[in-house]
Length: 260
Image (cartoon, rainbow, N blue to C red; front, side):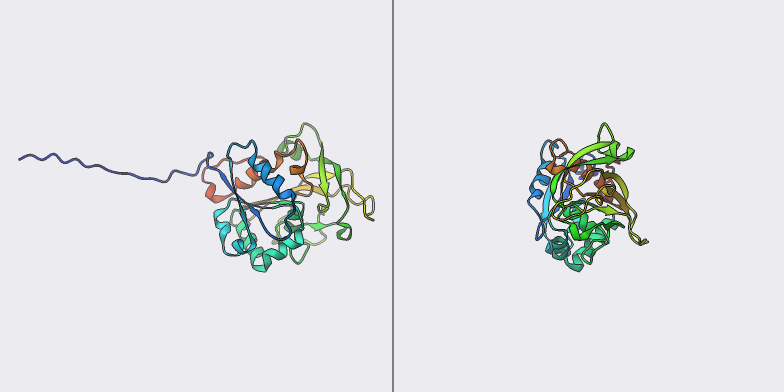
């Protein structure tokens, strides 16, 4: 008797992480997060073709290790000190480890304060001091930035100047100290005009850095002192920065390098 044996092989495979997979973005949720957070999330959600998968993370979740499931962490505008205190020492260390291991960090206004190494509650992600801490409440309004050649290219601006909304963001500068454990930042834009309300002195803000970035370990850091998400025509700068940050995440597999 002849038998015909048919062997059926069922092969399953996990597809490689490619350029079409969404970038996993977690936005910090907790004390110190201001109302501009909603506009920041809208900038990532609107007209981006599902490029980003957005969630929110609390300090408790960060301390519990949930950053392992994230490509980019965003700390939005609001109070940098309250956000840093909400993370606690353990949470701040988790963020540092996450970035050094390949994660991306975006800080906007309050989140940019948080990224420095100039406060007890800082994340120590960039070697930067905050100029004139006493007059942090400098006012709200439109200011002019001057962009570096790389800044103009990366931020997709036709010329070296850009108008943007400012709301008490940090005036970043090179510190007198040199921390070998924290990288120097690259300044993509500096302030040309200034806000000097509520007793803030004039002649201080101009020349300080407004948009900076750096690489830390195998991760990346990007900070806006002003608010592109609150500026008509500049909302796209938020997803642009997030894409650049995600390009270094090891889990991104064959995701191509973005930006310069």
